[in-house]
Length: 375
Image: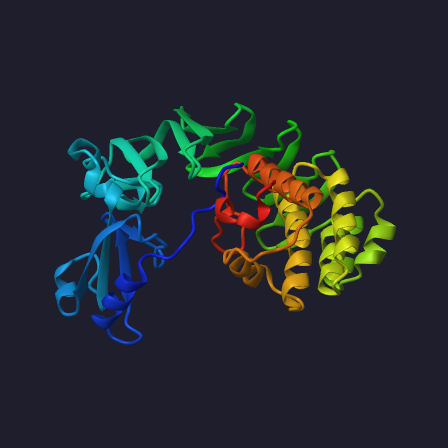
C-alpha cells in the first residue's frame, strides 16, 4: 500500500528483563548494537535480535572508552551475524570518533568506506571518508530500502561545497563552508523554491525562511559584538506575538493567505472534539502550503482521532497515546472515502519527507494498521 514510515517495536522484552537483572537500579547503562554505540536504549524487534551480552561493573572499567558506566549492554542482530566478514570490517559512522571536524578510527584520521545499517540489515547510509572528512557522494535510504537522498561534498582551495538532492534528483540543500564552518546555507522545497537561507559573517547571523509560495515566513538578524541585538521585521514580530498569545483567529484575520495559524486552529478544534472543523482548517492550510510533509500527517491524525474517539470516548488523546492505541489495531469503523483520504495524506507525507520518516510522535508501523485496509 505504501512504504513503512518508521520501524516499530522494542527489542525483546525477555532480553530487557534479563539484562535488567544484571544491572543496578538507576545504574548508568550504555547500549551497543552490532558494536556501534547507541545514544539511547535501542528499539529492536525480537525477530531481528540474535543474542546479547551484558558487562557489569567493575568489569566495565577494563573497557577504556566507557569506564564511567555501570553496565554495558551489547546487542547483536541476526543481520550482523549473517553479514560477510569483509563488510563487517567496514566501520559504521557511529564507530568513528569526531574530534573537531575530523573523524578518527583507532586513533587515526579515518580514510575509507562507511556503511550504516538498519537493524533488519538494510543499508541506511553509505559513503566515504578521506583523511577524517566526509568526501564525495553519500547515499541515504529509508527503512524499506528506497534511496531517499544523497549528498555530495567537494573540497577545493579551503572552500567546502555540500549539495544535497532527494530521490528524484531535486536540489534540497546547498551549503558553503569556510574555515570549517557553514557560512551560507540554502534549503529548497520540492517545487524548487527557496525554503530557508542562513548566512554568517563576523558581525551578524541572518536566518530567513519562506513558504513554498514564496511568502516570507520569518526573518531574524542577530548582531554580535558589543552592540549585540536581534532584529525581526515589525510585521513578523507582531504575527508571532499573536501566535504566542494563542490569538490564532486574530492572526488569520490580520495575515490573510498566511498558512501559519491554521494548524493551531485545527488542533484547538480537535481538542474540542470538532474533528470535521479541524480537518477543514487543515484543508485550507494545505491549499496555502502543499509542500510541508508534517501538515499532511496532522490532517491524517485528525481524521484518525475522530474515529478513535468514537470507539473509546476518550477525550483529548495525545498524539503519542493515539499512536499507541492505533498500534493495537482497534476495529475502527472508518468509511472507505475517509480511509482513502488518510492513506493519501500518509503517502504524501512520506513522499515529501526526504528522510522517509521522522514526523511520527512515537514508533508506528503503518503496514500493520489493518483498519486502514481498503475493501
